[in-house]
Image 1 (cartoon, rainbow, N blue to C red):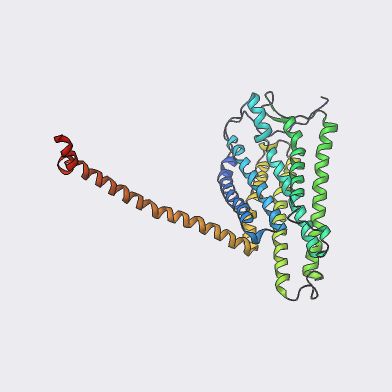
Image 2: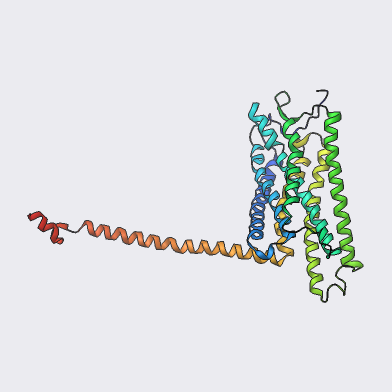
Length: 352
């Protein structure tokens, strides 16, 4: 190995946690709770409600799945913040799969690719509505979704391989076989992917906003006889654009801080920026509910159904107690009864 690049993620000698860690703990708990419940609702309603069985909603459900897994894997990493990092083989495994948040890296790539596909799909739907060759359909949507998940996992595999726990430095270190070649190529490819996705989304949404609000080439009089369709299309665009902006606003600070602060999670800026990454996984369901009446109604139906089950359970519990009390009373009365004098069969059996 000619040289290496060390990525410091956790100092195992610092068994004590910082004020920043304690301050962010309630915020993390809130973000995880809201995100797990909200993204779980999104996946559930898209799966069960036929009115939500559209290409856009399936892609939003895929985004919700990535956010859900991202938040689930955040929990063990959050626990490790407040304990001393193990060493040896266990330390290596934790560095690969938990401490350095490489699982979250997979989810972030999936989220970015999903948002790019959503932008392209919306662009084609508005500018080329009659050209079915450019449109994704429910029947073939599983192919791009499968490709983006496979690519994301394969791309992060080198991080799992080269991330190790360094007993000498007491931290997790990303050691490339040859940083000048392997490391530069790896991060260079990621930079190109981020750049291409960003340019694609900017191009699509710039033209969509221009066509909807300024030139009005989308949903013109010849295409839409009334304003309802235009308003509906604008709401969808607002929803997708809001989700994309939240993702960028929450993710860009982490990229900047990771480049500027080389001491990794030892800096307050790194911890705050990484918290923003998890925030982006929590607020998306709130955006769906704000812009889409279909999601609001579906969420309300699910929550009402579960609240009704809870009320039925609460009403059922007192009846169980009443039946149990009645049964105990009968048993007590039977114990106090002289069976020999009340059952003629037993009396006749005794005489025999």
